[in-house]
Image (tube, rainbow, N blue to C red; front, side, top):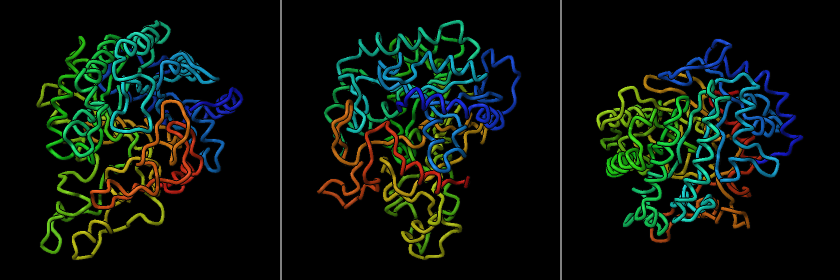
Length: 446
């Protein structure tokens, strides 16, 4: 996400209009700022616009149309907290938020030991045994900065370690995609205790609102994934001095592509066959994010979380607009054809996650868009790559075949093409062609 000082300065020229857009999306607030604990931190809040991302977006043809939108600030290394190589650090972002007159800043903590153990594209800097370093060199400096009285008037939404806890279910023995790294962090408790420590440290700060990642319906929709995940989550929120009270909400679809509503899949049976048995649905009781998030929220409350727990949904890349977007339900009597012709999500497989061809910007960030949903957010800054399409020498990244457009899945399984873009850069760096397609395929259209 690094940009030069010149680029950052260019981006700041856009921020006056950015604040107007952010206020319109999230509602008007008193100019004195957002103070006091609230049920929904997004309600009535001006949300910080990251000038680094804004400059990158504005430099693309047509990018000015969205360069004023708030996105998540990813703290993905120890150095990212303090800032390095011309990049803004945490304190820089907070100071800029105050300068903008913003009320809310969105942070993503993303540096667990053995990070992203189920993938190779973004493994990070800490080994599976480096929990002490994670606590002392990553979480503690973040908490110390956020405790500064200068920032007490800012609401801080902290998304704590996306992808991590679901991997302790989906990528441990003896699941088909299990990895030794996921087994290692499951055995030594690095993920559970790391997440718990972060929740406890940040939850003690009155103006911080923690949200825990709950993946998306294409990973945890099946009950044999979701139920054990709820058990893992319960352990994490009670680990390392934390309690469920430190969790203000959950976030679904972080950095993913799943649609909010599959509005044209209206039948459960076609030609005498249930859509559950189709290759796309594959016995998953959920086909979109809002139905999944609503059910998961009820299950969390039933498992002891606060009845007011909120949900965020990342809509940065789930629009799936453009000429291939269906405009009505299929009339086919073949159940697979019906689903494929009706679905808005155009991925080849619902679990495909890397730089998906055909994706578009989704709903713009907005507060309280649906019951129980605190906000639609762009937590993943659109335009940043998910991973390199070919092996590249880049710190913290090993090549993941799911980012290779020629990859067709495990040799012992039915061919499952990755659906990834060719010629993509390493994770977290700017992918110009991909961003331009997100603009073209935005839905609602720009």
